[in-house]
Image (cartoon, rainbow, N blue to C red; front, side, top):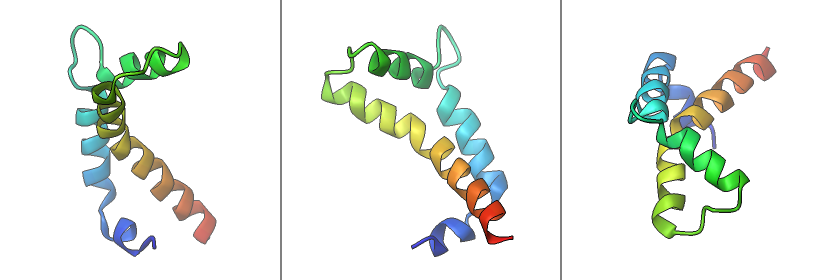
Amino acid sequence: MFQRLDRIPFFVLILLSLFLGLAPFKPEPHLVEKTRMLLQWQLVRPLDMADLVFHGVAPILLMVKIIRLYVKQ
């Protein structure tokens, strides 16, 4: 299951996490905005949910890869 994730270099995941996780840089990153909306129960439109997934996948994959690195040892 994790073989494909293991083949993705850390550098690529870090770049994707920075650019997708923080885009757009002004006025506020979408990931921050959508997370706040989720915590306030205001995330109701399908477009907002898809936006949260799109901007959050790379940071989540990076976290999973880091966790797997420490669990393997």
